[in-house]
Image (tube, rainbow, N blue to C red; front, side):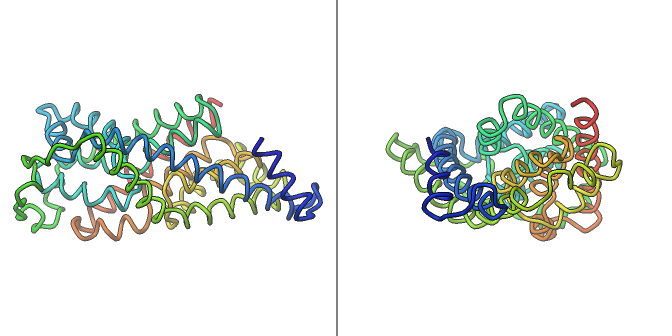
Length: 320
């Protein structure tokens, strides 16, 4: 129904020829902009309502498990239902470090939170089907858990800025503080306000990403990506990661681009590697992390996560 209306709007009311590149790009842009923003609003509202039952202090207690491997797994899983993008995950990451949660465990959270969040999962499921969504969540969680375990085993606490461990939590902000109980009306209001807050932060990134996706959809030749980013090019995956790292977007913002890339012939593994590098290794995230981590630790973090993303890209290009 919505596609038919967009076709009517684009080709009849606006007068673009159905086979034209510009018409195809405009059609893609209008269709995906409304669809994704509506999906974002619904998914964020539902997940935010559920999230209201799990305040940060409960999360911190769960992560401080005696066996750190279990802590890594729990941190990666909890990352799915916590902050929406890498830059909003960093303050909570800092809070975990200050609260004494093991460093490797906090990194599992930091990687998982932006990369495998619930909004990305919902959008991937709707736009690509459950198989792609499950592949993405499984690979993202694997990267987060394994990278966190490796970083924890390296014992790099000395590469965290000294002042981080000296900060005392104020009442209610530390690991043991409790927040007032929320009524059902409070939870609905929290979810509604969180939808507005997140949309204000991300709508421009989403629209820009959809515009890029529309350009790719309408103007990039069908065989272009198959030639330069196909399975026969052994450097396609690292190139996709290298392009993704300087960019900043959340997972929802990259999905329209990934959809257009896959439609044009980019293998799934290469597209997933691009998406992961944008969400888990964005340049703004590194700048914020520099406030609490020394450059050497940031470099080690980037190297380990990038290696995991490359492995995911090559693996899924091989098996699919």
